[in-house]
Image (tube, rainbow, N blue to C red; front, side, top):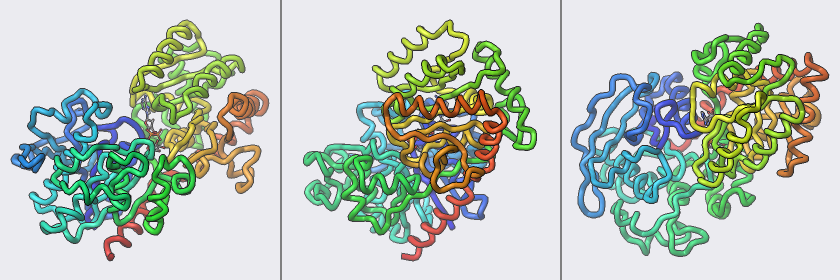
Length: 492
Ligand SMILES: Nc1ncnc2c1ncn2[C@@H]1O[C@H](COP(=O)(O)OP(=O)(O)O[C@H]2O[C@H](CO)[C@@H](O)[C@H](O)[C@H]2O)[C@@H](O)[C@H]1O
């Protein structure tokens, strides 16, 4: 099968969070199974060019219709760790992708509407006719809309779209100018509740809603989150739309790429290890302590948090966990970046305040290499999210024998099974700690149980870590599930 993935991220060349991991990992899995996979991405100025091999001009004169005129683009091709990627570079005063950042600009709606349009034009003009176009999140929500309203009539009538939602919070709420710019026009046609009109703001269109309405299949990134999005406020106002389209909506648990996230082969950690020589993990912990200038107290556990610092991630609990860990004779390592100024200022203040504490290190910023050492060196990983469509840090943590302590929401429910209370798994298949409420005592009780096991029953703690390592959260199962969906929509 010929699959084209269109997305705003692909790890490690463009990665702001988990979306990048998924786009890369799924593409690799599909290719290993004999499918032809290509990716279309924006050519950002700030992406990691050191992860692209053989970047060259692939299509010099791509003219993209925009506001009744045309914008000249170049398309570059290169290999990102074996995946064929096309990068679109527009030459216009808007400088859509030369902003020193991936997201967070006032005109993000326009930037990604343009990218979506350009990606379809590239397919059309270069005569690429994939069986399936797989697009991701609000940034590419207009792709199925334009495919079925415009490009279908220009020779792209056989293409089918699978649309995956990684985060319902960001939907691309836009004004009519997006319709004019992309030449969809006909505002009165799209401003209908069964089309793109936002379910709550009567003056806005919703790009993610467009993706749901027009795609042939819609997925989110875990079965539990699919249920939450459909039936609870976690769908951020799209529950009704999902209800209308429930026949094509499902949840597929994300995998992780075990070529990249695997302590056995990880290039970024000083000591590789497997479940059979699990003792080696302790040397990574020592290396982590040295790197972050933490005091070397072998008996203390290291608890880690890795992730974006925003309200989704339960930052108030992350903050509380730091002090609770210190109080309970544990060490704490945080690697995170905040885009919201208030949260950023808060953690900068904490960092200064805790700067001289030998049991704690807060690293504010994005650092892929350091994240590997933390997964390998920590003993526990905390994921106290308010909501979490899937979550990757707990599954990556488990692969590295790092015990997850998570809040029981979204995909965390599908991946972490409480050592003491899980009703469905026998004790030998449990792999972490789960709490449910958002208050401090809920968090403390889960941390307390984990730290208690570490200090009082070290052999059992070790066993719990090994049980986590035994889980298969690779792309193996999800790869099959996506291919089944592709097959189904292809024959419609
Ligand atoms: N400061 C930092 N430095 C280095 N690495 C960092 C980092 N902050 C985060 N990362 C890395 O980024 C990834 C984050 O994964 P998450 O599952 O938390 O994704 P996120 O919430 O961004 O994305 C959304 O999409 C993903 C994918 O579908 C869903 O799992 C998730 O629930 C949903 O919110 C991990 O690989 C982590 O190691």
